[in-house]
Image (cartoon, rainbow, N blue to C red):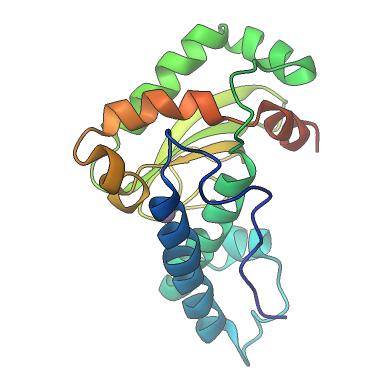
Length: 198
Ligand code: MN
């Protein structure tokens, strides 16, 4: 089965002024679509064709087009889900408890922001769930992610932030720290908790 572009549950302008409509539209319809097209080209007619995107990330990263474009598809699909125009809430439930065990929400915010700001070049910052249910903050270069055995720290992503320039340059230019700080106002904590509980 080949992959297709997931629909967003909000409009392109819904996240303004944090993320502008033009950035959202280009990011979704051009960047994400290109990862999907290139992933499909790489797997069509091969034994990889029927694997889930998670399985591809976990097992097929020695195939460079699959690593880059499969990572691109997985990462962006997660990113759209953890954004919401109704942000400004705080984590609840099991996720709240896990963040308290991590050291508290403010420590998480500090560590995650630091991971996003210091990722050199293009990549992602992550909050991941470890096998024992604890949380860690990490980052990956390019379109790698923590499902991949090549990641410095592996785990299941529950929150991801795209820090490629294409994610913020129209609105923030070189001011990645401002984009990172604003991101906290559009996090869908209900979705993050759902991913944590899954
Ligand atoms: Mn992106």
